[in-house]
Image (cartoon, rainbow, N blue to C red; front, side, top):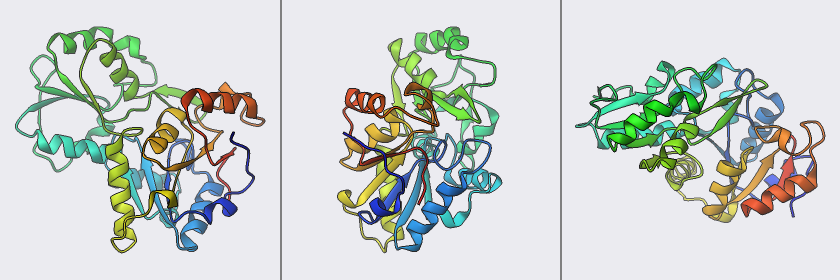
Length: 286
């Protein structure tokens, strides 16, 4: 069973590399979490490598610019690996085909620098789903007819963000994963490019190795940190990595409250998912 820990520093000694989730751990979509940023900086100062691993449906470079605006210091991480980066690799391999982009304009950085041919849903060869067109007012139900039309054409969908929901301040908004899951439930074929699936971890560990002189980190010396059981924890466990759970993120209201989470409810959730974190923290603190 997992237990609460007050500080990250004693646990950090067991690891060379941290794969740290971003939204919900490092920031909440509106502002950085100073204590989490400090913890990552201290981990790096002690010789550790911190790779931010995010299901953001945009390139790592675009994520870095967003983090700059949110006042996340660049000293808090060595590199960023995003599901947008993995998506770009898929798109590169399919450049001869036309693509329907299902998502907001802000995610177009996924395609930046690629000779992509866009097309409407009626004629495109495949779909890249990066989210809802307007996640402030829409829900997956808003896309029932569009998903039915895509399925009628048997279009292959690339999901650039497997998250179902994410926090924006104190509000939960739907992500691309919610639409992709609805499409898959209809029988549509979906490729998920982010956590908990292996491609994003393979890329993150390759970037960690590059930061460590080309030496691939041993799995037992890698710790994944996140606030989602479905993506962060299950993804890490599937690859044989240890994990640590942050309670103040998207699951907070499922086990008491943000201020006083219920450990028994947490462990029941972990058991149901088949995961056992090394530790549980309300927020990442050194």
